[in-house]
Length: 325
Ligand SMILES: Cc1cc2nc3c(=O)[nH]c(=O)nc-3n(C[C@H](O)[C@H](O)[C@H](O)COP(=O)(O)OP(=O)(O)OC[C@H]3O[C@@H](n4cnc5c(N)ncnc54)[C@H](O)[C@@H]3O)c2cc1C
Image 1 (cartoon, helix red, strand yellow):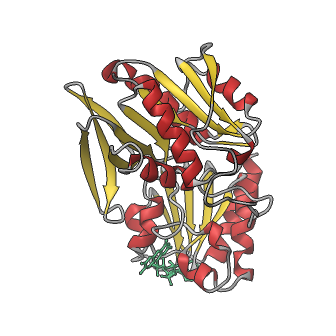
Image 2 (image 1 turned 120 degrees about the vertical axis):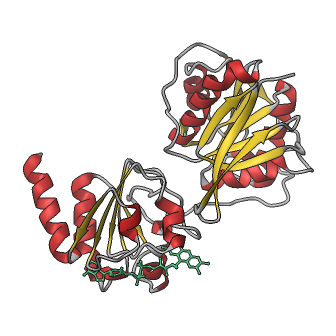
């Protein structure tokens, strides 16, 4: 039986924007796949999130609401999500490719769960002759491959900030489902999550990211990067070089071994543009690079480039922006 299941992610009762993007894309692909679009939400005391999904345009909402699902665990969330997919009879599963979503999508597609086909970190999903054809970057973004989804069940994770999140709205019913395991029986339990960048925007979710690299010169050299980020209401990002040096926290690292971001605007200051950094930001809508070296590789992917010292360019940019406001 066809149909699309979207396994959504919520925090504090609020559905993540990346999940709404995945849901909106599922609704756009409904006529190709056939069947219903089912939104699945997991957690504890998630009535608000379930209600928001019910009003989104999904055909039905399935909520797993229990204390032992309050914090994410691969084992618990995967078991619930796989059951929801089987119960809905869905042939396609969409998950937002957030850090949690990547873990879940890989687990749910595995032999112990759905034994499904899997295309990770998709940046486009097209239709061809009734099949879904996913586009995904590979080799750190150096190449793009197209994956035709022909398996009986197929899991796709969708890169955040790429897909339009416009939802048609509706009024679906919410079904409360029982997790397929006894409460407290999970073999590993997450006991708490500590925010490492308190009060800061997350680079993976921000519309604007201002990132700094070794060109900042020192931890104090990030002051103009932080000031511009504040003026733009942006997140601060970093290259691995400065994270390895201990200048910035790992949570800010953008790239192959950091976070993958696709903001509307990405400002790279004092970052050379190594392939591993580009892997994390090259799908940004507009890229602005500031670098002293006109031959820096970052300029090859930049929409706008400024050759100059970031300590002079960034304060001037910030002042010009504030003058416009
Ligand atoms: C397996 C692996 C995984 C990796 N994963 C990642 C990853 O996830 N993310 C990541 O970023 N890197 C990653 N790297 C590291 C990557 O290869 C680069 O070493 C790193 O990105 C370089 O960081 P950078 O651009 O800040 O520093 P540099 O390469 O040292 O570049 C500094 C730049 O600043 C410019 N500059 C200097 N002074 C100024 C100034 N005053 N004003 C303006 N510009 C100035 C210089 O011209 C230069 O272009 C990985 C590497 C490996 C091997």
